[in-house]
Length: 184
Image (tube, rainbow, N blue to C red; front, top):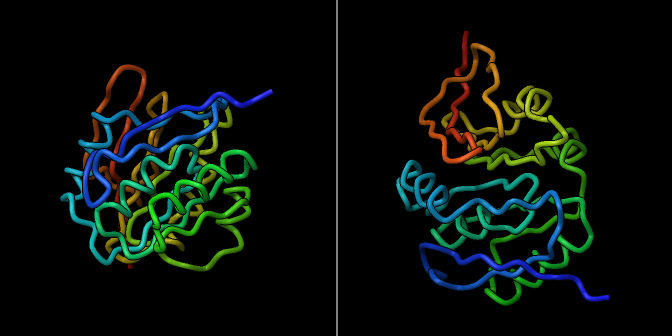
């Protein structure tokens, strides 16, 4: 039995219009082109020199888009073997040396890795309801002026240390760009 493949295009940067393929999986919901365009407009298009984390990388749409737009390093974390293989294949196809795919559980990564990032893309499978737990782990992985992009099916209450920088809704997806407010 062969796995069905999904496809998505990179919409900007050096790999604009290049096609990414990924295995069909019930938890994969690649971020739509219109949403990605909005998010990268919010991030001011050019990510030159930034370090990014694509947690729950899935199709890799957000991480490869960031790399295409100049990110210096993009860590892509996913715990599915077939998804991980596709991320590696897309990395090789694009010759994306700045991309580091990791086969790992996202929560384990957040608890064990000590690196800090300028932008964290956070789009966990909705059914797992991980956003409240993940929001507690994010501050130690964010650079001082870092931003978190998140997608969710429903609105959720952020604690007062998070400020919504930008937000929008399209169809059943709510997405926002958040910044952590350092007190003290």
